Length: 420
Image (tube, rainbow, N blue to C red; front, top):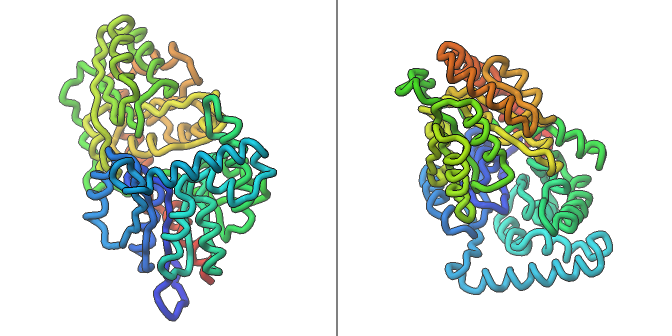
């Protein structure tokens, strides 16, 4: 880290429109600024009852303060109802006139349900730099910085105007495009999570984004590569929500075609009984596969929870533009836990898959037979699997961890420049 030339400790406010426990990028950023000696404050939200406990767990191990905007139904008084009405009215207005013909203040509130509350929280204490991300926080960060006449940096972890799916995708993406066009040019710096996403934002807005990958700190203990049950290939996948369109159906079918004894462990909230749907699919097509469901957990625990598995699944679909380009936290978590990685060969994941070498297998999108071949090879050859796991771990130690100069160090350099 370079030496700062400030008469006092610089104050940084990190902002997210999500929970602390569902936005590990901002959590790591706040930790990094605090470790470097900055005076850190965080603005976050609370809207999912299931995530409130993991938020408290994270806060109990950190000294920096958090201003939480609570809009849980039944727990936040009138906030849930007030913000919900404002959000729906703003969306109707923006839909009627079109996102690019609607006043930006309305667009910001149609894009972020608690936009006004985030702005108020962000300006409630003086600071020298605002930095943050997640969709609903982008416009709020820019507005709060303007009110305080300070620089801001924004994190575009995803290509937000190419992120949505479903019946309202076109409208949601248009809202995102309007917000991006308004906030990106004024940012002191922009970070993204993959080079393909950085290239999109360069083409759209002429901005040079800095890539800060979704890496995590090196664990205190290296992996234990011993397998307690070599006869069963233990597969692992996690996300906030377990649902369709995430490549899990293909995994079940691939395990069946491979004809291997395997366990698929899924961590996250199940969507509308989806785990039971997968179990029924396995019963019909992969009778040697067992599926185990685990609840969501704190980001601090994710690497340790991945241990005792053999293969991590980092699958993406190609029908949503952002999913083709993103590079999520899955693969980076797996390699820090010493797992081999089965990865969909997307533009976002291709370079990492190549860098991991024998530690990863790149599989064409939707190619069930290819995935079956990968799983079969690892299951049949314990030495090959052990080599893959050790190779993945060594790649994490060599390059793919949060303390690396190209990761946390990039954030430090950007903040230094913005505060100069």
